Image (tube, rainbow, N blue to C red; front, side, top):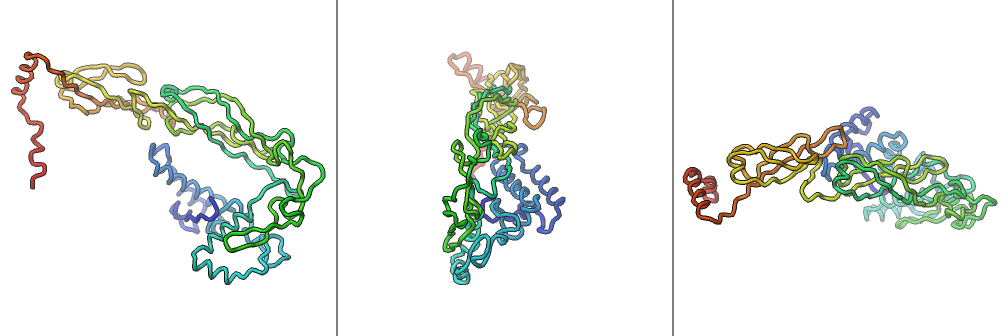
Length: 391
């Protein structure tokens, strides 16, 4: 969660602040099942709610993250164990942040009037505890690689039946020169940011403080950066591999490819690659979730007397029975003739919307037959409209 944004995670999960981990886990499972995108297709509100629930559980299910959240009202990966207070001091002798000479009473009064005191501190925390570089005493430890996304355009039938595609994706991979350390080795050099002092100024709003240099962690020195990767430990290279797309993907489906995201750091595993699909529409079949919708033209005679007519499906042509007296716009259902479901080994349904086609009358014989039909069936189809609009 970005620093500076406060959210009530307990209210999101519907639990008390003193709830036990088991209770939080049960609340999460119940809400996740209710708002999961798979059970609420094409529902943006449910998708956003599911993300909020996932974010809240990610913090409250982790003991250390929850402790930081309970103490400060927000969580950030930039806050170290023990919280920001563990790194602060009130004078120049402190190991982290030097607040000497700063009048907090004047600052607090002004910020309370403007309503920005809390957000300024959160912004400052974000700056203080962010940083990078290859330090002399504290090299970066192992960290799982980040997940990546890749959009893939698919034809309608490839999405329905599944397919294998060969992808070339540029992904950050471990630098072969420094083996992911980011260091060129050799003697240390003076930190360019702090010029060897180990301290650097930071400012957020009206507050200006001195913090431990984020590039060298206060040592004043750094290892020389690897010239191949610039000290990041990674180089982006294209990689080609084959991916199996399962039957039934739709617009926005996410197909997980394990370990094909960004490389991990210092031997940690790589992240995952998520294939996000864009599917071409079909000129006849309309897809909504796992269901397929088609429009079937029928004659007046077929609709009035009933008939057996052929209708296209995803599996080929099949015969459907039109009941006598079928009206235009009426829908008939073909069970399990829809798209394959990604959630289970089942299929959606196909819905056939009947469209009664009125013939063009060009000869007197046909006109006479239709007039006779009207005399034999004098029912007024607009009788329910006669009183509409009257007081």
